[in-house]
Length: 407
Image (cartoon, rainbow, N blue to C red):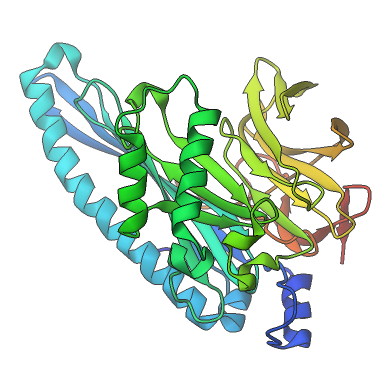
């Protein structure tokens, strides 16, 4: 179970607004904040005739809600807590099995032995007072030819904590499935599909499509070996609300005017930057001494010695868009690169001595918590401090120029 961390600051502006506005069903959703994950890392050791050796490297990040969010959305917080507990139980069961298998592998194939690895992480997709959606991402590497990974979408009603079915959001699953199949064929022309159409239709009919609801649409995910070879990797495709408004229940067509959406590096984020029926494809990658952003096929390189990137798309009420890209410096600290996305271009705004990683320095190691930015009108972020020190959390908002403002 994740240990609660007390973060300094005041209530997010979006939560305050929601409290003042009440629970009016006709009001547009408002972005909310207060989600975080604790980062745990553990190395398990064993010993044989050749000496001590590593058997398993484990990394864990599970979603949790802070005190203010729990008070505002108790049912949602309970649902997230139960889901996180179940994920941790799954990881513990898998850990026990992998430790036994690693010892056996070392005995049977000493020349090819390597430590096994287990990694579970989460990343937000959408967070407002109507819907909370996030991805669970799991990776394991044992004695096989390669590691195995997969993503799982989790979607909750923010007020009731009920887990949403795709049929709650999509009115015509048959038509939706046709679109998904057509988009997969168009977006992945080189993929080695096997029984793709049949598999997608069967999963849709049985309510087993893997999906998230995003601020501007629905994304469906297919893990390796699901509909294509391992070499084709994870496949995903997005249907935007305003591309096919007749497909979606009206309750989900109204989305927050301002939001912040974290997304993984290497994988494209499909959205609509101007909130219309025009789709935009955005991706962030790291290179040798640079950060690369690709917007609708056009590449932009920025000189920045940052790795382990954590990008967030920030969408403002006036439809301005920024990228907050938190990354690690060569010295091990973190900074946040701010870029503006406007008129089909990506431009540098500044580099902030801030990070979404909250650190508590405790002997002999340290505790780390990742604070998710989901509401540009109020979120938690930490000023960078020297390594080995605890960081202090500020409550900030994104100003009209993309820079931080303090309340």
